[in-house]
Length: 399
Image 1: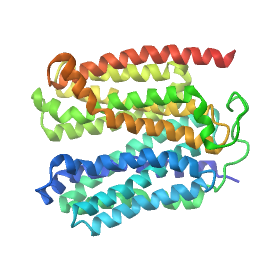
Image 2: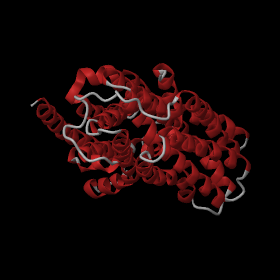
Image 3: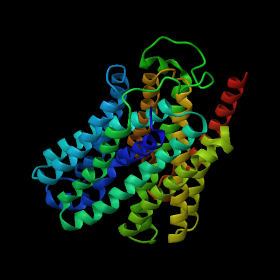
């Protein structure tokens, strides 16, 4: 018999490691100082490299679920994250080695990210599933804040000690995984109403035949593409408009995570009330947040805007995962549907720098303000498109 209360706790604690790359951010400048002959852009790859493996491993993990228990795969992912912490702490003399540790971290993140979300669709249903999906997004943000804060303290002692955050964040999740996550999905989790609308052949890739799965993936991809314009341009924005320095930008980046955490907690309630408007409202929050940031450049507007932008990701991403899960009839298909959305989100993150190029071409200026204006316009257009699509989708399901 599954202890669903402890399973919830296990899923949330394991999810702390989902934003593992945040753990390296406090140490990047010190790592750059330790390798002065290396370009800053190369040093920054230590944080972006894992994302490539998250995309690949998300699909591989979903495919492997037909052969290996999700518990085992998540365990391997958690061990990889812990191993990254141990290796980075004690073996750090070469930049090539640090890149190798980032690869191991990416493998761990790919396994953990894709499969913990699919555990929710495997073991929970209805409003409980919706609420837990939101809480998982909050847990990811809390984990990011913990790693950033603890990493900053450890980096003040020695930059290599920053890697210990992966042990600190990974071990509790691994223990709870071993104790409370079952090897197999229970049989009666998916109701007939929530099951895929039509029968299909077995196999995790079958769910990808549904075009609407890809549409929700695109919504998640575009949300992350636009969202990340904020964190990647904050330091330049506060400097350009004389609001503050890199320290203030760091605090503002934490506000993004806080917004995501708060909205994640409220997601279950809001998704039920908003229904088809959940994704459109998420895009409106994104547009409104960037508008508040630029309308009057000061600290108060910056923090309020960052809070609103952070909230957007906790509305759109979990809703996209939930909606793609409707088309999954088996645990393997559920894992694949989740993997597609998460992979799309990571692709969106990679494409974010293109907003800078587009804004410069459209407005003829390198100012960060115009990058944010472009995000506002695109987000409002996507809000309208997603409202039309989700309203039509709801009508078709009721028919």
